[in-house]
Length: 508
Image (cartoon, rainbow, N blue to C red):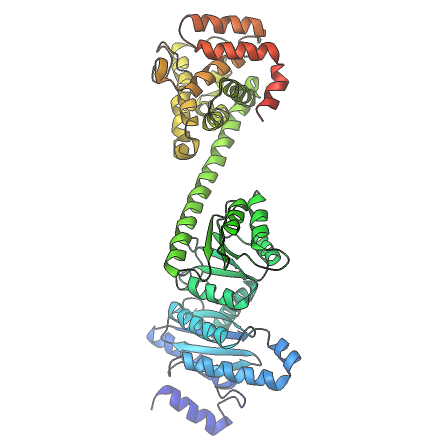
């Protein structure tokens, strides 16, 4: 006779029934006895077990709307489904009014979680909407060393499941079952509960974490509380349709990078155009082809993660660029002035939008390499020694290395960072490029950078007037060092604008 059978016999002989009268599963008393026995067995033989607490969501609502008899019927059906999803050796009991407990002998948390998901999914499919179940799982001895702490861990996991919006299975402190940093979280938006459940079931087969919203307003609320990797949204919804939801997401500075796929029964060109105009990243018809849907989801999430990493790197790099100015009190505002003036000249010369953007970014980053130059060299009140000058010149190569991780995002701005001290005759640094080897954006930055340095106070001299600065630049141009065409545009611009005011306005 096995241990379970012997325990049941002794329990019935001394205390009577071992099952709950309503649901037919074990009652609370026999559950407590089995829990003690499982803890003792695990301590003796070393193999663990798991506990799942299954709480019925919204049972009070069922009782209030349909009466207690209907509520009792729900409990009976749930007990049958839980029993049907578990093994004969597993111990299913009614722990309290609307709370069931399942002991999984010789079972790790990961396997218990898989069973819990089968239970949750089956109950979710059985009832049209509510009730659902929330499940908390803990393992002995992985998460607890006594029955009391095991119950507490399972209860904590159960609370977490409810905090996540109900109808969830959560393992206490188990990374295999919890959504990890690499698990993608998708927000599904649809006013039809059947569609929500269909899409959720599809996504869970690929281990995506799914959060559902039944309206545009609910989606925006979820977005304010949780980070998402992708949004799948229906188009035809009351109050706020999918187009408007997408517009609001893309106009939000903290949400715009989240990819949005529009799912709709509409198959006309105007709707697709409207989706694109609202900022949607993709547009698919209902019901979506599974293989195509997962391919697009995977691609967009991968792109979003790359962009997020690049954004983080970009923020760090631009913070470093601002730090450079903080090191040198004489050059505060230099970055903004140079960037604005370079953009002004680029527009006058007729550069492309990509080149204008390169001037804007390159202007902000061109001196970032000076972060590695000692303060005593940056702020030295007299001429630099040859050794100090070599250190100062190294800032172009250092800046290039700092910005290199962003090469795909910075594009031509990277050449501005590296080559803004090159000269047309090859006498510049760091690569001694000549003439057409120097990109136009770097030539513009070279002129603008020198001009701002001449008219600004420095540790070793006072800033000079515009006419004197232009005269020095002209000499450099006549010697074949600076682009004379760029110089002409600079002179025209200075003669017709108050640089300190108009340049910043024109560059916007």
